[in-house]
Image 1: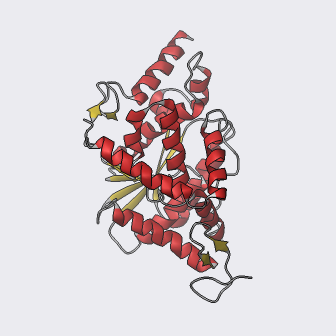
Image 2: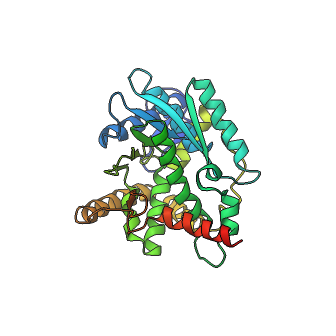
Image 3: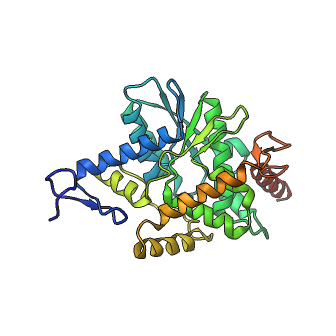
Length: 307
């Protein structure tokens, strides 16, 4: 059994990209410290902020809630959990319960909103009404979840919204946008996004941490997370891109992080010269005259009225 690089205990995890071997305690501490450094590097949060943590019930968001609870325990920041029930039959109930259980254990408050209450339809209904459109289930869900989280965060008076997006999420989404030709949406991938409206700023404290490390952190911390897979998860191109990137990482450790760094440089150079727009319908930040949320909601509501 190999020893931890920081102490004499047995190691439980090796970072292939750095060669670092860590015991359970030092691995967990490294995740908390990586998160703290990311928050500090991008000035994601300020003293006294009200932080809306978007918690879905998955490993990333529940782990983020746990880490932020530790990091803010000695400061004046206030955490409020926001959870979105998209309305996916036989899938979302487990996630909402898991998030609510952790919120209760940590002594926090929670705001639960649903697609049905906000938009007048569930995700299942929305996907049934796509008809001949080529938009994927993940695109519909992602677009509407972002809007739902913004509305919930604004309702609770949050200064900042923290989401559990990790390094893998960033690189996958970057490739998806590149292959789809949707360059306008790349701005919203940034670790820190300030809308320049009355919406809370958005931050991704886990953006520099690999997905497998967050999963292992959740395991070591005994955080129960959703076990039922989303029934729509393999409909889009993301699964293929995930598998492609994972194979590259196995053969070339660290390539995801290198891609992340390069992508940030590209985003920085392109966004400095682009004039930011606001949606003519809702006023939210948008890459076009009408934002994707308003277009999607209108399309589904139109189809609902026809049916």
